[in-house]
Length: 339
Image 1: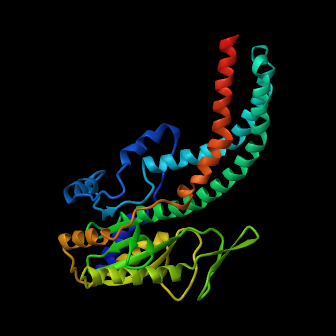
Image 2: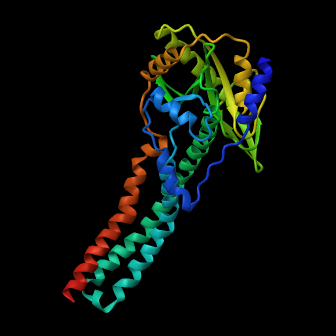
Image 3: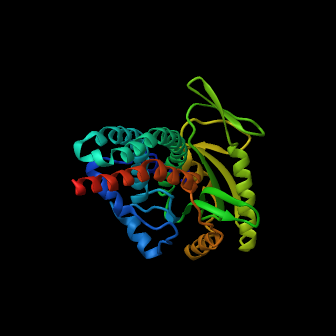
């Protein structure tokens, strides 16, 4: 009977999430915006859970990093980085041509100096922009995979609790955890998400390899990462004086792999969790679940993605693109005023 109930529930869970991102629907993304560390009250969460046909879903105590307006902003910023590369060369060309206008003749030498400097700086910015774009794409692939898993976890029954995108300090280095899932039977699942495309070549120790398009590159070993995350969570549970069991799980959103550790494909994630919980008595009340989620969040450390910390990219953009443009506009305005 229990397995039949699980299977019936899973029919609804297997519906793949669809992210609609068209120009006409961009503004609907803003309705989804919630600050990073906002705890959803039970009453408000229940209303959200029953909206849209009365579906009951898991309680989300910490949302994914990029959703709604943040997701839109990330996509827009990535487009701007791409556009800025040809823009730097277009501006350099304009700097070379405009000084030859008659009104610009009195200030032509100064304008030509700016034009001469803008050409090499355009090449400098192109190189920096490519590095920034690559870093953003790598981060975006991981975040998109984590977002897909977060949407799947939200479809778990209401007795479950989910925390996404955590950076927890467990007495040592900060530990990045993609997802924590608290089951009603008193098990804390620690999830590490990987969104690698291609053929995965796992190893018992050390980095894994990914073969794609004839190239092989190394990636962090998700099993070793997950083991470290589980140990960190066990320390945190001990500090919170919680007797919950702690289990690790690697979730693959693209290619999958086999290793001496629990690994599951994203479409099978909810079924895996429900099956693991099947036959176990519910030992966690709503208050206990909420208190545990809040307790874990007290160890949360706020931070930014590595590409967001790259202030050198912003300074390079200012010096190579914006500053010459500003100087040119000021000098051109003076020339027109004198004319």
